[in-house]
Length: 220
Length: 220
DNA sequence: GCTCGACTTGACCGTTTGGTCAGGTTTTAC
DNA sequence: GTAAAACCTGACCAAACGGTCAAGTCGAGC
Image 1 (tube, rainbow over the protein chains, first blue to last red):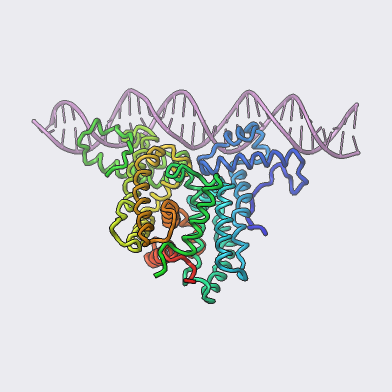
Image 2 (cartoon, chains in turn brown, purple, red, yellow):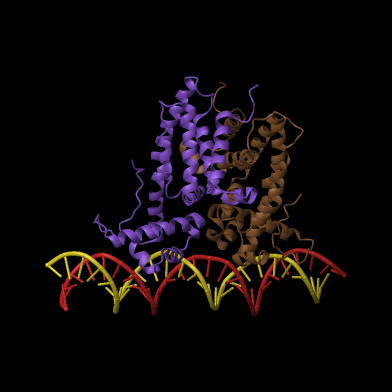
């Protein structure tokens, strides 16, 4: 399934050509480097030359593959969106709420651990008002979230979940899990650890899932 | 109480002069405009001329008050830190955990509602590795968080709280509350509402506090 | 109303930015 | 092998950037 986001890329890969080996390799190197640059500095802060240097090629050559800064940015975002939203799609109405939500939280935390740049990049784009992916948020994403919110509402109706607003629950899960990537610097300053460490990651998963599923107050 | 962050400002206000009315007014206008600019685009993405335009003055005049881009940024951050970290200081060991945590969550959400730019700015700085406030995080902030973590640990020891890691609990609260400011665009795209609306804000407060305090699973 | 310091400006400077282009090199197809 | 296409580069450009400066305006105190 695709998010329906048009990356706007069409340089080098004329029309829909087969894409040569060398093209494939270089486009991948560029996207990887651009990923980190855009994630760290945002769209305006990113420097095309720095991306080229990180990708190990000249600025001119980079612009041969992607005709403009905006084209690189769009390509990076398109690459990101699918993998970033994938875990939510796995939420299964037929499953057990505890297991489903717990698995979803763990998937999201592991995604934040493996692709912290992706999390930061997404955050940066949204924080600036989502100028590039605003229509994806309002379209495909909203459709997906509405669908899953209905699943959660159903669970509540069946008495398998406390009465909680589904949207705020989803926001809570997104916020907590992505926090470990976006605010990694702060977390490391305060605890000395990061989710790149397996032990700390498991501790985070257990804590977050525990809080969201059971709360912090004992049973009265 | 101060965070101990040196803003590095010392232009115009020679030494520690009285600061004239006009100075006070202009510095305030600049900081307000810079606040929004830095929050929206990050340090590198921010444009000094755009700040000046938003503040209603020439770029030259802005540079008369703050000698450099970095000086403005530091001044903005210094302004931000105190108010941003204030709510955590109010967490009272002698109080009831439910009321204390609930009040803290509400304070943080209301702060995000009133100063969404502050939240975004803080997020931006930390996401870039906290190059400017890294020492504040590792120093005064860590001290404060360590102190409050001990309070939470004490509550747990007294059996008034589930066994939960205090640091992850604090991160969870920070993440969820600030999410409503940082990801306002996404939330608005999905729900049609924002925390600037009183009704939605109360709904968010109730949901977040409910989840964190009681979890989403019914008592077994 | 004069004076001195605070305030404000537009013109200007060196650097960096995103992007172009002519021309050279390598790979691919036959 | 050779020709065409794909790939790559350095030189170059206009615009935008952060910042300086000389010169002028304004306002408070006398």
